[in-house]
Image (cartoon, rainbow over all chains, first blue to last red; front, side, top):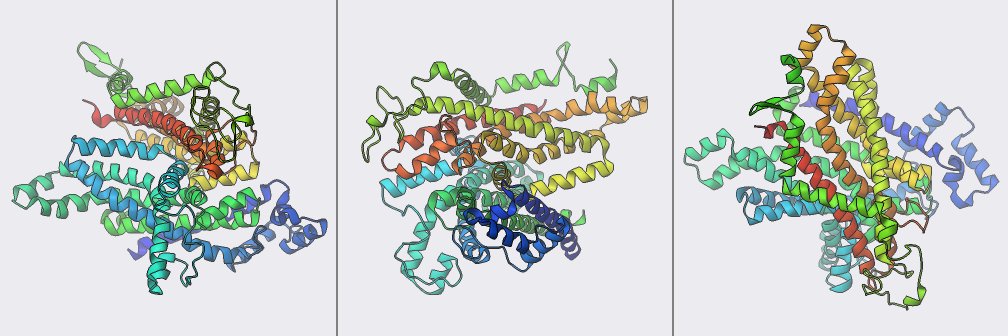
Length: 334
Length: 302
């Protein structure tokens, strides 16, 4: 297992290097040149000269790349044109927000998707099954931002059951030691803040989690259908084991492998969906930040944001790969 | 014809005739209600896009501010079947013309992405060796960035335009198709008929072009259809984020949704109908794609 992990980590290095080169090249391909792009509207000729010296834009490209890597490694991503704050500070505040949303969406998707898929398979070709298949199809065809708008309109604007935007009440003064609002409320023992945080989390999590929900339901159903016809399940039933035990010990455990694969794939895609969801709900995470950076041509933020999210994506995929190796011993041998 | 050729074309005997795999698949497809529904939806979508000038009751760019009062944006009425938006433009006409943008973006971006991806995949699959390694490493790197993020990066670099969106979505599709075709070809390479052909002395290039590639096409067709659905959603998503064409005269479903956010309370219809348009057209391609997958999947064959 250790050897497998090390091998995977080593394979990671060229990808990370390649990513950093891609982003490095990208910022130089932007209209107006990197200095103008990084300065935005404050681009006076003197400021441009200063930035050129600072970033060494007159030095050979490979030197520029090395100093770029150096500053990234030390956490210096520059300054946001929009907020005038350090990009690294913004990341530290916004990243937990996106993680919190992503986790909530996954809990929603897995918590409903797996039981639903399982039940649909058990009641194959009956109403619940047809409903789940139709629902899955629909779930994938709805764009995340449209669903977000719909949910916002129905539950927040019309019914007033849930708040429209943000992570917490605007007048809230609750402290945020960890940056994860739900966790913070638990840690500071603040029931009001907890309820507030959860209420704000519900709609965005549902919007973001619906597509993974649809896919997980479908894959679970397919996996359970496959497994239920296997010989070892028939043997277990023939042995006289209770149906529930057969389900738990044999059907579910083996059906979970393809499902885990899909869950792993979805987690990466959630990062993309988060950009749209956070924009609709003004969530205050990395996604909304990147959206604003696009609108305001805040390229320092875009550069850091894209690189950061890409690295997170790669790491998450690595963790997922490692978890398959844990679940399925056959993978470790390859 | 020889046995090897028959196997290559994957013919089987049905009654007194040799039936091709494609005829078989077509039959299965047409008996699948979901796939047929998908075909109908797609036909509708394409027709609406093609005949937009004939079908749209109003000029999509024409504003009629006399209809708008503070806090009131008229919904569906006899004059405007789906209502108007915040500038008094007829929503039905905008949706009809928006179908054009969506179709063009979807087809062009997919065409570009698939073509480039398939070429790279075919090269990697056919030539193997270091060509394969280099191409696939590059594809891995592109896949390392989540799709929308990659699209955003490309579109931001090129600037706000239709071309940017098309290029961005095309680029996202390149590694997907490259990997797909290469994988398909690699598994074909070990097939008996390829070994037989090689043993008979058939030239490598002929084996690849005349046999391996056609037999690898089935998953590509499925993927292309599904990717078209995704392209429509992604294009709308990019427009929603403000990366699409800035031309107000060209309606685009995603941008229509983005514009409605500020007055959602007064005019939900301005968001619901474009959104539904996206869902319906997507659903069409998705249903067809799933139907094609089932029709072409060898496991389902008798």
